[in-house]
Structures are given as C-alpha cells and as structure tokens.
Amino acid sequence: MIDGLAVLALVTARGGSKGVPGKNVMPVGGKPLIAWTLDAARGSRYVDRLVLSSDDAGIIGVAREHGCDAPFIRSAALATDSASSIDVVLDALERLPGYDVIVLLQPTSPLRSTGDIDATLERLVSTGAPACVTVRPAEEHPYWTFKVGPDGRLSRFAEPAAGLPLRRQDLPPAWCLNGAVYAARTPWFRIERSFLSPATVAQPMPAERSIDIDTPADVERLRALLVDAIPAHRQPDSCL
Image 1 (tube, rainbow, N blue to C red):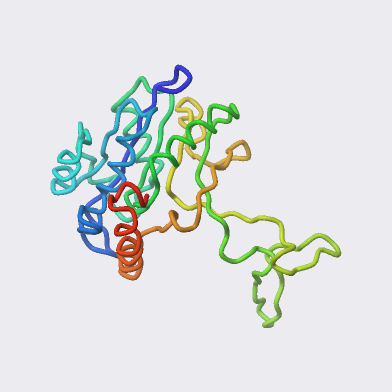
Image 2: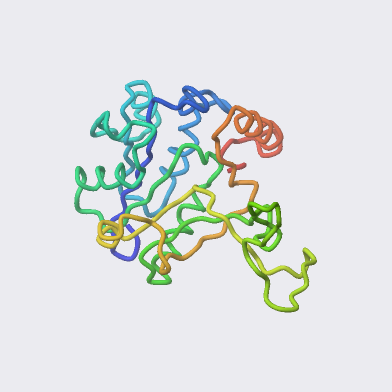
C-alpha cells in the first residue's frame, strides 16, 4: 500500500511466444526468466498482492514456485498473438476488484529492479498523476530520424526549433518507453483503457536495466550482461 492506496501487481506471461519459444521459463542467470520479474516485485514496499495472468500450466507452476499467486487461468481468447495487453489487464481487474492502483510488469524486462517499481509508484503518488510509466534514453534522437518520400527525398520526423544546433551535446533529452513498469490508478485506467495519455508522467531508468527480450539475440545479450554483472556483485539481486 502507498499513501492509503492498495496496489495490485500483475505479471502477464502467455505460453505461445513465437519470437523466443518458451522464453518466460527459459533459464537465464540461474533462474527462469519470469523469476527475475517476480523477485523484483516481491521485494516492493508497496505491492499488496502479486498475481500472474497466464494460459500456460508450466508458467503458472514456475510462478507459484517463486512466490507468485495465480488465482485464475487466462482465457484462450486473451492468449493469442492479437490479444491486447490492455484487455488482459482489464480482465485481471474484473477478476480481482478492490485495488486502487494497477502495476503491469512484463517478464521481458528482467533487469528492472525493486527500486524501479517503487520509484514509479512514488512518482505516481507524488505528482498526483493518473499514470506513470518507465522510460529510457532514446538511442537515436528524433531530430536525427527521417522519412523517405515516394520521390526518395528525406524529411524529418521532428523539426528542431529554428537555429537549434544538431550536435549531440546540444540536443534536448529524448526518451522512449522501455516496457518495464506501467502503473495507473484503476478507476482512470478502466475509463481510458490505456497507461498513456497527456497526463501520464515518466520515471526514468538507465539503458542498462532497460533490456527488452523479444528475440534470441536479446536473450544472448542478457546472458552476457549477467555474466559480467553477477561475479562483481555476487548476488543476482545486486545487479538488477
């Protein structure tokens, strides 16, 4: 609970991943991928209940082994490639009423820390915003990205202010969603059916904790990061 608000953390993990088959339970750094997210969430000062939404018995079993409640099985209609994450969250809120804040945690962001989760909730409350999401520094600045027209000519996606220099050191900060933590007040979320709006605030995270597992190359990159980090800190939690 934070500021008198009851917090539900929802981990979403379906069984039919195609980019990396079985990725949610594949061993990474000495434990299943999903366990990195579950361990971070269980350490939160503010999460009142941690639950899993999944259609897969294997994932449910692993989650329960790592201290996560799995009070229902997600319907097949919400476990397809075209199913919306928003609909999955709304389904969980219908099944588990009574929470003031919903936090969505995806297993594909294994390096987000307990501190990242709690900082997101603290920013949600301190700003009075309806939603808060984590972001990372953009790898390519919007002022350096272009469209190519039918005639092959370039045009900028974003026009810099007149006279603004385009040296890297002079560019204004730019941020991207990193998918690690999404938090929202549940009454607002039910109406907006989104975590994003002009009223949503950002919680920055460093690039090194913002890896998103979508391809086999991402898995190898994560394993390499953990090999580098764990010996230095001795414990997996220390490198989150």
